[in-house]
Image 1: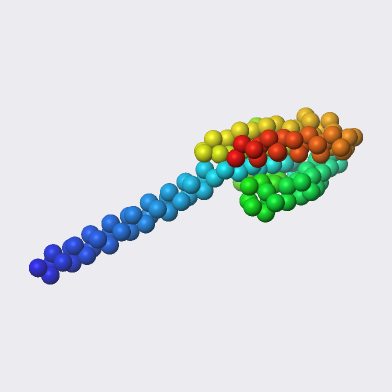
Image 2: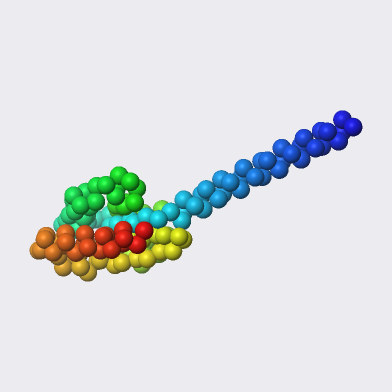
Length: 146
């Protein structure tokens, strides 16, 4: 009888352990599927003035217009050095070999990428108003999708 009660206790413990492991996996999956907009500035280790200007003006515009969304975790700004080995996968996903600017929307496990690289290079140094308004417009569209 003692053998059966010990066997039952071990089985119960193993069953509960398995359930808690699945709960953690489900939580991690839910986090991966969280609705979020990322503005990602890819760059190389050695950066030109234009590349640095794109980053600086992007940060400034996002802080100015979207401070609430950033504080709520709906909007994230990231810089990614494509020369670092730990960033190869994300650089490959976005096909970024150097400076690139993307608005990336993730919702319900789906991903949408808007490439603003050409727009950024054409406007970041010469037309600040156009750069800021264009970036804000794209981020607003992305946030409306959440």
